[in-house]
Length: 483
Image (cartoon, rainbow, N blue to C red):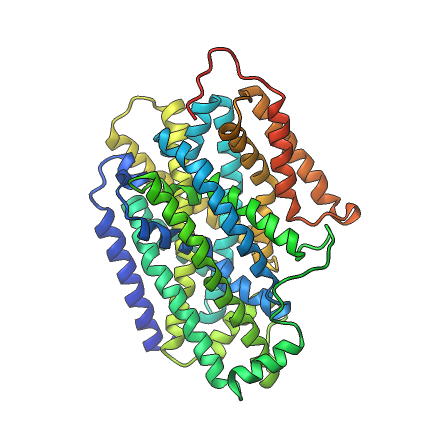
């Protein structure tokens, strides 16, 4: 497929807007405090929308409709637990981060425990974020490749390089303000698709409820109690809580923009509001999946992709009219770049603050650190491109994106909880707790079918294991607890 002139014009306007905004808001940054946390002057409303944009990503845009298409609305169960997880982050972790005036959350671990704990957590963050963001880049690139006809490799490179450009120039301030525009494009495109589908399905919503309702497509709560069932209500709520607690509270990717608010109260307000808004966002994309299922029941298409992750992009390219198609392609780009830019910023901030400054060049000028930060953005961009290329043949990308985090999120969450809840724990003890947790989770993951424990429980198990083992160790005498 070749883009029409109108579709190409829509994309060009979108790219011009994002590039101009990213450059204009961040061009005056002169130090790493401004580059990484915007001198803590960001309004909470913009931070809220930026968090939503980063969370949503192309996994939401492509994966959630695909999940509803092949199953039902049980994915929404995670949103209930996710709201609880956000409340815990807001009132347990954020006050500690703001008291410590940290730029990265791993600085808090250094203040609370010491160097070894911070280094181990930073390493786990790098592994998790690189793999997860590489998968997100792949998800978006698949969509762009399908709707434009471009080779997948070109789509991957284009996505990554655009996000790299304005992140490198403008830092976190550029990331947040471009995310605000991208979430508007992202959701606007989704709502437009819902309107189009309802307008073109004979009988509209009544037909949808008749066909999809009989098949259980609108089922939200799965009450089949089994630890081997990843869609069980208890699994969805408990694991939604722990996954969110870990992803938003211990992963610099999402926590970084919370640290840009003026006060901890603003940060808490932004975070809690995202949990409320998350419900209509998830329902929007689940509804697209159900509508697509009904649409193709009414209008069978022999060319429909066997891989359900490709169905929504296929619909965009084969059904949407000119102009609307361009807007939806822009929405896919928005979904991709809102996740990529934050990942690049977070990886860079941790690399500079947690590794480069303390171990490579301790007393350099702000200009030097800013230059190295921008070069590091380019390095991480290249790494993400490589990871996306390696993973290009996988299916069910939504669940792969989640599964990557289960190996390390439990260990990270456990050690942060140890820091804020109790006065025990030590550098050596934390390393033993975190690394042994990962080993246990690897064993359980490989054996999950035999032992009957679904993968979402692994974050819970990892966090409990890390916290419990960490409790066995006392802090060294003379260690000051800043938390």
